Image (cartoon, rainbow, N blue to C red; front, side, top):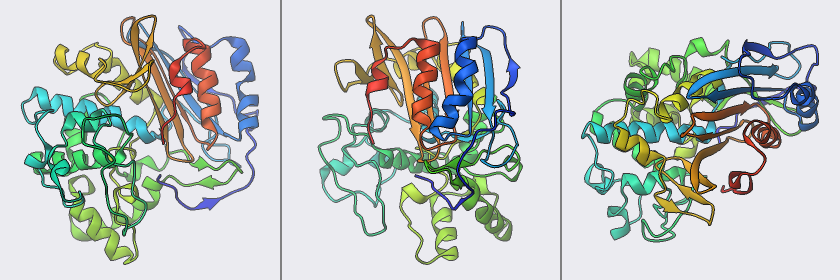
Length: 393
């Protein structure tokens, strides 16, 4: 998802570019592991990554390694922005639960009552989907359509079982626009990202992000520009022509702009920005602020809602369940939260235990980044986690 144009050559992580340390107290990675990390990055063809570790509910250590783009020397810092991919979904879940606290939405009321969704197939199943089904991936909808001619179909009745679905999240994005009457990005900025201190994070594109954004990289070493920036520059120019700021755009505006630019454009959610399921761009330091809130330190949610997010709502396997918008694993009879992100050339991961306030977030800018995030997470949080063995496309 969100792949752009390719440029560049085979990746070599320059050993001269050392990690940019902002916080070193309470380090959660051993000196021996850190000494080997750049070598592991070179082996995996991942030129840059950033890591943040939280302890006692606070950011205790964060660091960037390598470079933003292969062949260049601009270093990754802890404020470097990466494609968060599906780490976008827990942030959306936070927004929905906050809306529930404000009595703007009922998690168990059919979304059809808020917005009859023309993309759904005819039949009763379309009128059964709720926000809870979306957040627990139990809508019965597929992950993504890939072309304009592909129709949505239900694999099962909503609520019956687990099937990972970005399409459901995009439907919920449309519902947010309907309820609030404004653009999705505007709502997320004003009610979620800014209050959480995620002032540089965005689901669309901002011109001031250009200096902070990392490029993605294929497994063969091609540098690939973030899809948000490729589409975003065009969208910003259109927004200026229309005299309508990009954060105020709704779905229909995005579709109109895309078709004006290219009559053959793919007008399905997987190719649209903003996309709540995967278009967030952020840094490890800013995502850590979200994790701090999620773990209960001034969460901005009712305590009941915060705990519900992190409590099993749907059993997936013997060790894996889903909370509201975030995956859970069971370690010694206590749930721990986690989620991965995969936009092709950006791979991300977070894992945490809310009880002691411990967590890690890792962003990488290479297609084989999962080889690194698993090693890093195991070093910081222990080697045995069911999350490492679970994968769903």
